[in-house]
Image 1 (cartoon, rainbow over the protein chains, first blue to last red):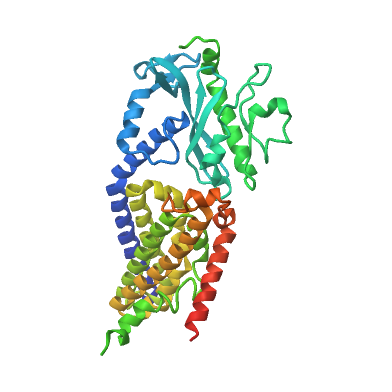
Image 2 (cartoon, each protein chain N blue to C red):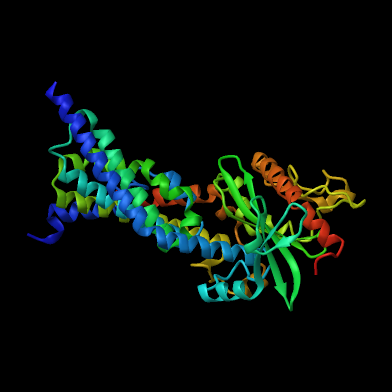
Length: 232
Length: 205
């Protein structure tokens, strides 16, 4: 009997010691981690509009400098009107504007999608015509490395560039990740609405397509305004 | 007494070559396949594992007389898990990009059989200093193979080392091509197989 009590006591003490050590590490390092995450976010926003190259690792100063110069965070209301932070309502959605020479070149919308194993977070940049995708990045996901995890790779994200979210008749169709390659599976007239999928990760593609569609529908009022040239 | 004859020396150097955890005992293959596409990730992974292994061996050995036998595996895993999460947090704070590339594999050090094997077979029955040396030795043995495999894979797979172009452009102009195969997991299998073969052949003498 005393053996059991000893085991339980040992387990309790060990749990408390390990638990407090982890709490200490996690709270102590939190500030650094948050800074990294913020930096990574800015980097991904810039990457989605092609302001920084994927190959070179940019320094903290370049990223925050570029970000401060070109990116403006705004909110949109349910009519798709841009509102500044002070006037933002409860259900307004955030959007990042890429401003160059005092003109909006593109708008960047945060994408939160379901994945196969967890959430996928990224940014989708759409040019100021409200139709053409200028870039896509993923900064957080839990997909299987080598399969669904390829969504964070350049080759996959590059396929989004210059694709359209409208079909030939000007109807909204979103952008879809094909099962396999686009060539040969999708009719030629719709190639511009599809990107190549990842082999072995059709579920990730399915979830991400659905997430992109849902997000794009939410931002459709804003996209329409861009299409009608109501925002310069 | 010569230093080569001491027990500590043997404990430290045996796992680096003779009874190397990967090429001698064929443990920890999964992570060795996954993180060896690039040299940089392989080195960080090797360091993280060496840190976890050294600390877990040391702390388990210090407590070896008080750990109740009936819950020893749970105790070992708790200690290992704590250390792994700690290492992961540190990487996230200071080497964010690499930690993103390593993704789940730092967390999966917990399930790396090298660590539990050393805790069970060595640290539970040996004094702290020797256990620490055993941990570092095994960690370095693991890292050594990882680095060798990563050099082979990055060099032949991408023509680079540490992300810098090593193979001159003149080679490509003359018709040389990167081996796409080395970037994939089977490339690592073959590289590890060749290392095991080499190691068995050399140490048989």
